[in-house]
Amino acid sequence: MIGGFRTENAGDLDFTVAEEVKQLLADWKQDRPRLLQRSDLDNDGNLDMREWGLARAQARREVERRRNEERGNNNDLHLMGKPDDGRLYLISTLSADKLVHRYSLWAWVHVAIFLLH
Image 1 (cartoon, one colour):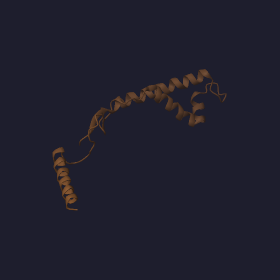
Image 2 (tube, rainbow, N blue to C red):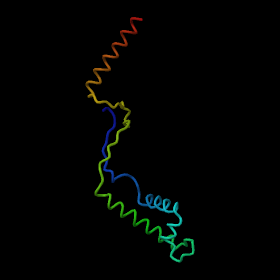
Image 3 (tube, rainbow, N blue to C red):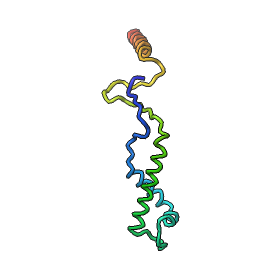
Image 4 (tube, rainbow, N blue to C red):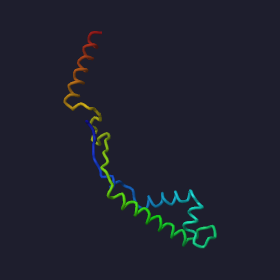
């Protein structure tokens, strides 16, 4: 491959705990009856500030528990893309030397065809 290739630990991705807590709370809000069952301590059908704070704390604990479980199960993440320095980006099963040879040959064939016309 000619281009940018790097390997990162999947656990090092830039997801903050706060973003994950926000997403989990959004998921919980989609199922309001379950959210109320989980967090409505006075059973009035609404979450007051104290109950919402408890729900956020519970979501944070859940996110941290998941992260701890996943920490041991992380696999490496292989990423490839266009390099930052402007080099060519080409994915191939051939080596760089074979690619240079192949495209040089094709370039000469095209030059010959151009000159013959």
